[in-house]
Amino acid sequence: MTIEEIVTDTFLQSVLETSTVTRQQCMTLLDHTAANPLTASKPPSPEAQIELWEQQKLLYSYLAQLRGLNRNAIFGVRYTKQSTAEARQEIDRLHLQLQNLYYEQRHLRGEIAACESYDHKYQQLPLIAVDEFLAQHPEHAGEDESALMIARINHEHAEREALEQARQGLLKKKQSLIADNKKRKDDLASLDKDLEKFIDAAKPIQKIFEKEY
Image 1 (cartoon, rainbow, N blue to C red):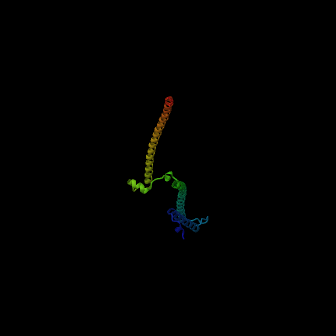
Image 2: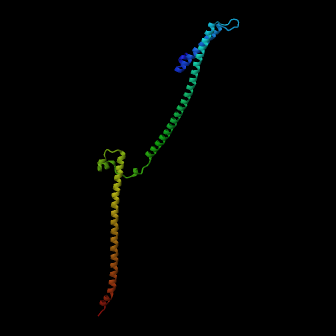
Image 3: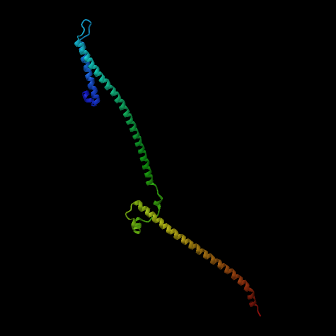
């Protein structure tokens, strides 16, 4: 696999192309220098010197392009590092947020399980059967389990209130009867005392009738 197949980025490909051209220009300049050596006895011809200068200028141009590409590459690396760091921070923040959501989800599932397994007091109420309740209150037919349970509890509450009112009425009646019985008992006790007084008062008269004449 060639380097052109490995490097697919457009910017890096331009760097490779410029580097290749610069290297080729260096080799051309070296070949030209080797073919026209500088000696005191035999200086190069003006044409050779002009050609050397042209090749040097071209090499300097390629080197300037490489320096510019290198500078851009450095800036690109810095920008990539900064972007990577910012993206890593965002990923870390999202990961932490996801972990918090997992913990919250676990907590909520635990709370839901605790609520579902909780022994609610309403489950111990002696409610009438669902069929019997619906027979008495057909308007609740078709309601969901929660609404039906609330209706049954309300029905039980109303029934207990009615029973409590009846109990209070019977209690008042009982207290009234107790009061009446007490009054009658007191009246009988008073009558007994009056009767005893009457008997005591009649004893002298009885003694008179018992005398023998």
